[in-house]
Amino acid sequence: KAGVTQTPRYLIKTRGQQVTLSCSPISGHRSVSWYQQTPGQGLQFLFEYFSETQRNKGNFPGRFSGRQFSNSRSEMNVSTLELGDSALYLCASRLAGHTEAFFGQGTRLTVV
Amino acid sequence: EDQVTQSPEALRLQEGESSSLNCSYTVSGLRGLFWYRQDPGKGPEFLFTLYSAGEEKEKERLKATLTKKESFLHITAPKPEDSATYLCAVLDSGSRLTFGEGTQLTVNP
Image (cartoon, each protein chain N blue to C red):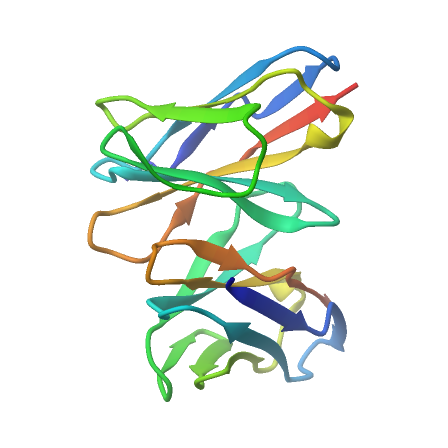
């Protein structure tokens, strides 16, 4: 059974640019959540989508946005990149009615 | 606001030396407490879910326990391959998952 797949694994972007990250959940999982992980802040919740609707949102600026498609795949977009956006971005999926979240390997974003 | 505090931040053990990691939490309507293992540059790997005080779960050399205010991850006779960062997280009634900063465990041969 395939796990959560995130693409790309690595990205280098310049300040001011925008970036789109992709996440394919485990088959049958309709909940997808995004997290930012940095050495100083740990894992910070960005947002959660369920059946194409944003269900929860963390305390991040509006530059961070996301969406979910009808096949449950999700994308996260960051506009006007800042140096502080450099982080490991993690996606997790959950089966409806279950509590366990399963993570992908993450996308390492470096902003220069 | 939910809070999760893990201690110690880092722990160095000799192979075979048992110890425990702590996770203290405050949460609005606990739906579950989770332990994950994370290796450098990789995503967290699910280990356990605990739902109510008194519950215990075991997997190989790991045992997780839960009280109303904290959880412990006991590591018995660890091996070098147990070296990783161990993360604790709580899921609240609003389906928000809050993580602690993690404990970085190093097991020396």
